[in-house]
Length: 110
Image (cartoon, rainbow, N blue to C red; front, side):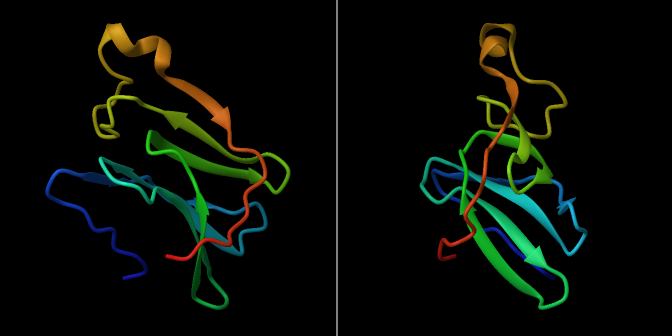
């Protein structure tokens, strides 16, 4: 096991599928927490088996690393259900999107 996300009670935690970094030295994923603080993009460096963390929004439904300048490309879903296979009801469709995070600093504590 490389990582396990916790949650429960009045909060909901989802973890996106992992994506290789541009140089393939590691993988990263988002841990989106609804109902509590602490959403993170987590990077796992393969050679050193270390985890590092950067801030992210709680509505990230998918992530893919691009490069250091653009960061990750993410899809957002305001419904908070990354398993629905769609963005959500028609009333919130305009809130869904694909965007770049911009440069990320992996300097947060777990």
